Image 1: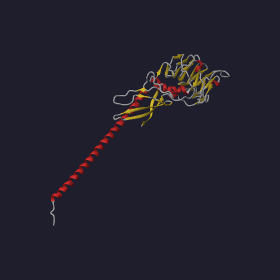
Image 2: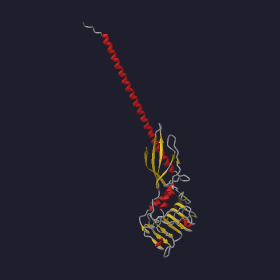
Image 3: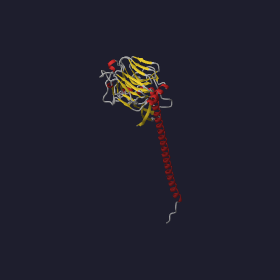
Image 4: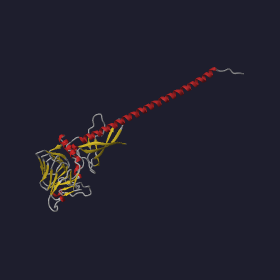
Length: 365
């Protein structure tokens, strides 16, 4: 016997399937929606974190520039750069409104005239970037020395002491001398022995054949005397820049605070003290070293400018003559002229004639 078909039963079963499929589709859409929202939210967070990370990096870069501005700004007393094994207290820089970086910075010694420091910039969401910056001090005067005495003008002439054998140290010596241990030395304490482990320069460097009077053995170097190219234009340019930009003072600097000193024509810079820096003696001017001390650095004699001494004085560094068609250096008296790389290296501490340049930087992770 055939059973009749129950259409309601069949329809009921189909309604159940539709409901199940609908629920599955809704669940899938919810899952897709949730995934999309999560993905978008994550992307937004990543973008926000990247943005804040970039802000932190830009803040750190701004902080580096503030440190360089600080180091370039003249101040009294001048900022003292660290040397090997001598840490110094941190400097404090200002942070302009809208920026975020650390304002206390330690300058570290790397090598002569090379330094490094770290700057931390911050952003929102605890974003932080650290930059390690390397800077260099670049003096604006010609680097190095050609001899204990370098005469770049015409007609060079030198008077040395006379006698069969020197009874004292050399009058002009291109060996490398250290500066005295005590910057305020007096008498024999200012007289040093050369460091024979360091390269020696010529005692006398000229651009024309010099006329030398007296006992040649008072002149010493490697070689004692030599002829080479002129560097007069570079030194003349530096002197003009120093005068035109008022980089000078009228008193002598010290080892702790070396300075550019200008001696005008018709004036005499005299005193019984030790000094350091660069002395520019204009045509017709004179620097008169008195007492029993020393000067550390460079003495530039323009034209008829001269250096004399009363007592016993040593010049550690170099003496340069420019702007002359004839020039006499008198080394028969009490001023001894010794090359010293240490005295010249200290000139980098004259901030007014030194540029601070950023040479490299990197992210520190």
